[in-house]
Structures are given as structure tokens and as C-alpha cells.
Image (tube, rainbow, N blue to C red; front, side, top):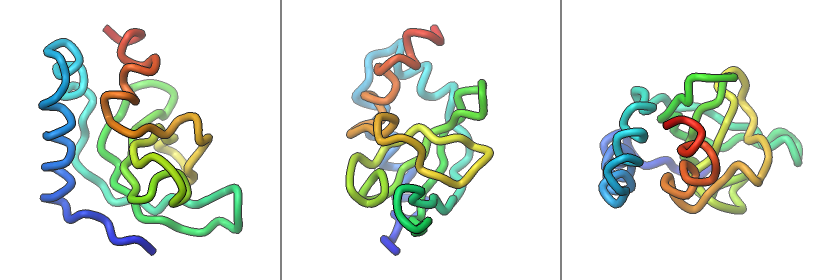
Length: 113
């Protein structure tokens, strides 16, 4: 298993991501943050291999949240992902992004302001 950043390091990573956003997007990002929660995500496209992640946001509808996983989608992609908060799987690769900002601007932000 890949090592996750510590809770303090992860908080700093999220803050740096948000610092680079424009004011409206920054306010939206802060509004969806939840207390950091460790979560193990399973790679459903293999043999349910497990990868540690931080769950850090909740979009407030349809059990959709956000997670950060080193190595990204099944350890082979971008680290910032949309997940279902009520299960332990990575979901589709199209829901994983190179940054928190990219995740928000790929549909979620515009729909929620």
C-alpha cells in the first residue's frame, strides 16, 4: 500500500490547492470540505486491491464526495477523485483529476453556484 500524507500534510495540500482558486470557486471549495477521514478504496477493475485515501469533501447530493489517493485512480492516474461516500470503490477513471480545481470546474462548480 502507498503511504498517505499525514493529516497535517493533507490539510496543507488542500489549502494550497484552494489558495490558487479564484474567489467564487475558493468559497465553494471551502463550503464542501469535511473533516479529513481516512478511507480505503478498492480497485474494482482488478482484484479489489486496496489503496489508502483521504476523504475530504462532500458535495451534498447523491452520496458524492471527494478523495485524495497517492498514485490516483488505482495507483495509475490523477490523485483527486470523485467517490461515492457510501461505498469503498474508486469509481470511474473519468472522475479523477490532476487537481482539486480541475475536479470542481469539470461540472460540479457551475452546477452548484
